[in-house]
Image (tube, rainbow, N blue to C red):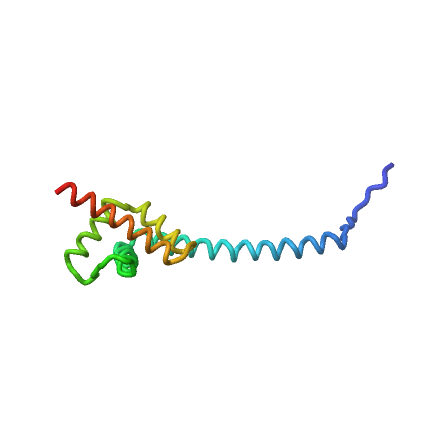
Amino acid sequence: MGNIQTHTVQCVLLLNLFTEKIFVILWAWYIILTTFTIANLFSWIFAVFNETYNEHFILNRLEMCEMPFDKEDIKNREHVQRFIQKYLGTDGLFLLQLIDQHADVVFTTELIGALYKSHYEIEEQRK
């Protein structure tokens, strides 16, 4: 009973070594995913809050639309700015950019054209 052990033994199982390697790989994978996610977040923040990018996005889609539209006309540009600020807003632009990335460009163009036409008709009724 008075026998005290002064040495220790570490148990090393092959499964523990294998599991350690898997967790190191998973940890590295999560770091890579986190980096790309943060970069994507900043690109979306830039795309949503950059007024020049938003105006360019809407003007290009309206120019591709079936209705006659000249993006160089100052009156059209002012009307598009009102359309973006008053009708779509930040959330509408965000939604349209999501639709543009995940759907066909033709669908997005027709959708923006219909929204612009609706906004234009509302503006004409107010006058």
